Structure formats: structure tokens, C-alpha cells
View 1 (cartoon, rainbow, N blue to C red):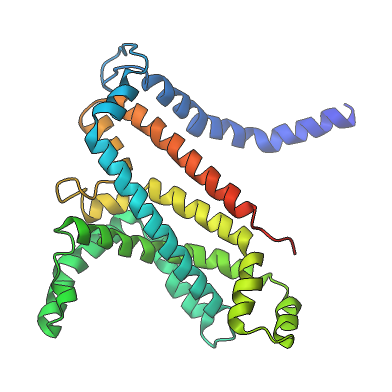
View 2: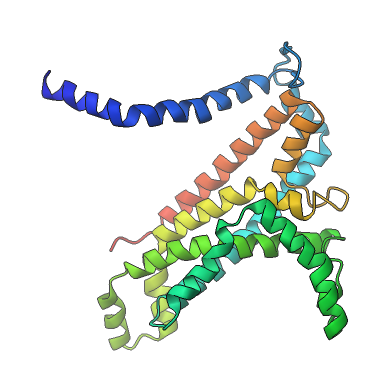
Length: 292
């Protein structure tokens, strides 16, 4: 056995199981979804009739509920992405300073990220409906007396609050890693030259942090578009489907209404939208990365 054959054998040994597993879990289901999106299969019967692109035409021309859920998800994605990354970076910037309990603070802020979305949603649903009502009676503040899950506007901001609270710890850890690897001598030289802390942050730290920002923005955008568990447990899509995420709409279409072909077409459209949006985001932020 020559060296090249031995090298291929080693790669196959180490990468083979992962490639097989990825193919079974990701590639094959995706190809099947692509096929079923061109059929009228209901998810139960043994036969699927070929209808071509009729499902896509039905969605784009007649499915107002899907369009509404998509725009709701797009709007909440922008708000959650901005708030999560701004607050996550601010926490990271604070917690890389020499604080006595900074490791404890890091752990506290990261804990919500390890909690399941369903558990988190039900806990916050209790807080919004019972906890805030009790605080409203005690304090008299109108903020706590709002019907947080009862109107379109308050439900929107309720989901934002919970999602940001859950995701802020994850991006904080990535930003802490990025800030910890920045060359300290560059910032020290800038301060010696008379740069203010604000100029040091905006002109030096942020440009050098663009690789971390690229990663955090990508994961945040991708995660919000796939949001289902928090949405389901917190509002259930209500009131009157006004807070229904696109992932929940797809699930209902495929598994509740038994329109698996139509649901698969919606999933393919969501996949295409996420690919386009994240590709633009990665391209835009990659162009602004600065090599150290």
C-alpha cells in the first residue's frame, strides 16, 4: 500500500462515519422534501401524485397566512438579531475587564442558553400572565399590567424579550473569545496616541472583531428563522395567528393539516430565503474583516 492509498484509507476511516451520518440525517431528508414539494402527498397515504410546481404557485399566490408568518419572522429576526448581538457584545466587553466575579457573571448570563426552548417558553408564559400581573398590583406600574400575550404588539415584544434573554449568553461567549484574542499592544498604542475609549472601541476593536461578528450574526439569523419551540410554548402563534413564525406555519401545514407536499414546498422556500439572507450577511461582514 503506497502513501497515497494509506492517506485515503485514513481519511475514509475518520470521516466515513460522519459523512454517512450526515447523509442519512441531512442530505437524504432534504432531497426527499424537495421531491415531496412537487407532489400532493398528505403524509399518510402510500401514494404521492406528481403536480409539479403547483404547490409553490399556491403558496406565493394564495397563501396569505404563510406570507404573514414569513414577514412576522423577518421583522422579529431583525429586532432579535440586533438586540442579541448589541447586548451580547456589551456584556462581553464588560466581562473581559478585570472583575472579581466575572466568571460567575459569565455563567449566569450563559445559563438561559442551555435551557430548552419549550421549558423557557412555558416559564416565561407564567411570568407574563401571573408574575407580571402580581407585580402590577403591587407597584401599580402600567408596564406590568399590559396583556403581554394578548395583543399582536405585546406578543411580538414578548417573544423578542424571551429570545434575546435566551440567546444573549451564546453570542457573549463568542465575543469574549474574540476580545480575549485581540492584540493588546494595538489598543495600548492607540491610547498613548490620544485615542479616546470610544474611538478605540469603534476604530480598533470593532473592525478586528468582525470575524466574531460574522459568526454571531449568522447563527442568530439562522436560529430566529428556525424558531418554533419558544413561539409555540409562549404564544402558540396567537392572537389570531399574528405571532405565528414561519416554522410553526410549516409544521401546522404538514403535520396538522396533513398537507405534507405543501408543507415541504414551504420548507424549501424558507431554506432558499435563509440561504440568500445569510449569504448576503456573510458577504457583507466578510468584506469588513480586518486581518491582524
